[in-house]
Length: 204
Ligand SMILES: Nc1nc(C(F)(F)F)ncc1COP(=O)(O)OP(=O)(O)O
Ligand SMILES: [Mg+2]
Image 1: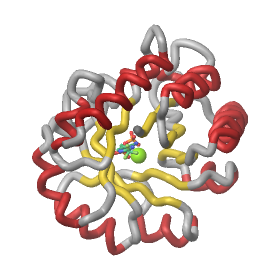
Image 2 (image 1 turned 180 degrees about the horizontal axis):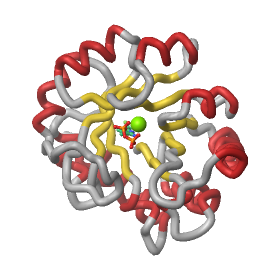
Image 3 (image 1 turned 30 degrees about the vertical axis):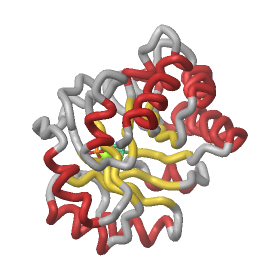
Image 4 (image 1 turned 90 degrees about the vertical axis):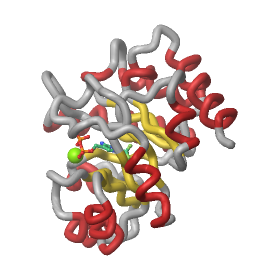
């Protein structure tokens, strides 16, 4: 149950959103500070520290998106990179044995990520998403089906919510990653709990 958020995805204080999402049962968090009006430099670092502390206090892995130096400065548990970010092999050298997540959109990209020592794949966008302006084309669960024989842990991403999360896990994903379905919820804790229940209840 992978929650991803940054200040631009939250309608209130991000630390509060994360605390409520953790109470609702998320199992891993990614700090993704990106998009129109996102924080940078010291503000991004300060929020990163507060979010990292909340994760540590609750035993939740804290992953940083894109920015390897920020991840190292925050002593994050890992990083997530996509095809337009720093080369996975280089990142693996910089982060040692921290968690390395890679967005993959084909078997070739998956094979390359495995050679770099990826610990999990992010696969998507499964459904249409408004969160990522430069998202690649919507692919449904086809890529999840194609990549599951690699045996690498896989999360689906892109437009996932309580209504469609079971489609993603039933297709073979080990989990789902979610931004807006949790961060824009009236009741963040209930939204996280509902998703968690769906993917656990939904799994065949
Ligand atoms: N951030 C992500 N996290 C995941 C995760 F697997 F963690 F759910 N999967 C995919 C992405 C997308 O990564 P990327 O393609 O680099 O775009 P962006 O940096 O804009 O997020
Ligand atoms: Mg990226």
